[in-house]
Amino acid sequence: MDEAPEIEVDQNGESSNSNTISGEWSENGVPEEADNVKTRSQHEREGSSLQQNVYGFENEVMSLEKMLQRRQSDDQFMAIGIVGVQGVGKSTLCRALVNKIKTKFLPRIWVSMDIETNDSNEDGDSRKALVISMLECLGVEKEIIGSIGSEHGLHGLLYALHLQLHGKRYLVVLDGAWDSDKWYELLDSQITRSKKWDELLAYGFPKGYGGTVIVTSRSKEVAKKMIGSEKNLHHLLPLSEEESCWSIFRDAVVRAKKKFVDPPDSELEKEKKVLFLKCRGLPFAAKMMGEIASEQLPEE
Image 1 (tube, one colour):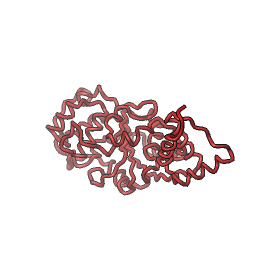
Image 2 (image 1 turned 30 degrees about the vertical axis):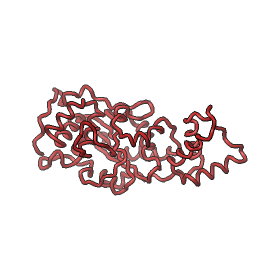
Image 3 (image 1 turned 180 degrees about the vertical axis):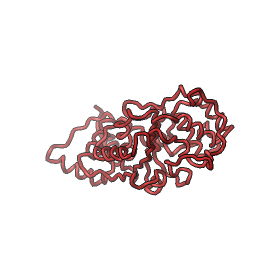
Image 4 (image 1 turned 90 degrees about the horizontal axis):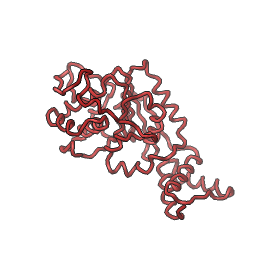
């Protein structure tokens, strides 16, 4: 293991700002601190769906819960992945899962892997941007993060993340993974004396305390390389029930504060079938169709 940066820690072995750890989740399951570090494009993509009900994922959530229960002991680190095509509901499913299991973990972090350069990361390094976002979710002050980054680079930032999470049963969601860079791979790896802190993202995640990382990605290969095992991959398929797609469509109209009345029973089943065929079982497509339809309806 290479020499650790000289980052001030308190008597408990935490970084000097450990009393500001937050990363809390709001009632709807969205991490309030983490939401502040999402990119503008992600806000536009997900912002209107944060309060929505979840339809058709009951069995999926149960399967993921069982997957997490496969760990050999409570203190074993575990990484799992959710993969599927664009619009299939990977982030929505992940939020539903987190709402079920969140009381078992603290701290909890949700970050987007689609991160733009920000004031704390002027060099445009996506690796540093990701670690900085996680530190910000944990409540570390930007001035401290900037100082660590300037003096110690990625090496110091990962070490600081490790200190913040050390001894804790943390939950980290890496949403929208896409980069095939080897730095993101093998999240269950532990740092050894022969390794350097900045060689892998995994070294920022302490092992042996029951920590968990959930990865969502459109790419099976990217997710598989990150979590290290295909048996911990959950393949999310389009919805198979017309009723679920109709409920998503209807909710999108109602959220737009437009008056919506189901068609007569004689036409309702036909309308549901037409919608299902058009959206192909993709929740995002059903939601967008509802938003478009709402533009043609009167307000409540």
